[in-house]
Image (cartoon, rainbow, N blue to C red; front, side, top):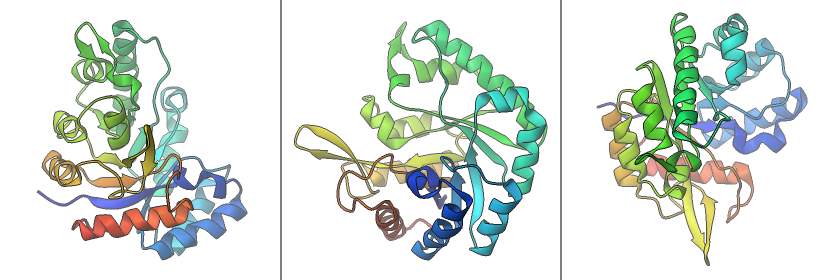
Length: 256
């Protein structure tokens, strides 16, 4: 069982990545934190080749993305070309709209299967990223379980540790459920302040990281991708938060 590598989800820094000039200033800061790999999400408009030039110049590998399902299904050649420019084989989506019903989750499974099969033909993977609402129960099963059971094996699941916990699930157990279908995982921690759940740097909250890391290794994850939707506890600066997560994960034994 190989250790998954650590990467940074750039959505954490979205307020600092709105223009090409912002991106050119901010990505060197990510590299100086120590990261070697990133997932693109939340960036403002930038030419694909220009983004690759910047990341290459900073020693950053684009290992995953978040794109829209419509582009994958209806503009497949463009999405494939974009990822070839990036040198990236892992394509993700941040979620799907639809009815909060069992039938709605069956439709999501159908859409994901169609998208995954289009990308697989070009040697790319497809991953669905969860939030907490996918753990609502329908006919005795969480929506995410309906998707898992009714989608092609080509559909992968980018389990988000915070949102699984927020939905009442066990992150390690869900990673185990998608073993062999989770090249990407989203690592974020949950702290409790008073009665409120707060996003926290990895290792600064209450999640069971020894169990999560063991599950990630056993499930064959390639990358654990650090993300904070909001930096709500110290450090509140998102660059500092990403740096703390990285140091904590390295202390846990995970590699860059």
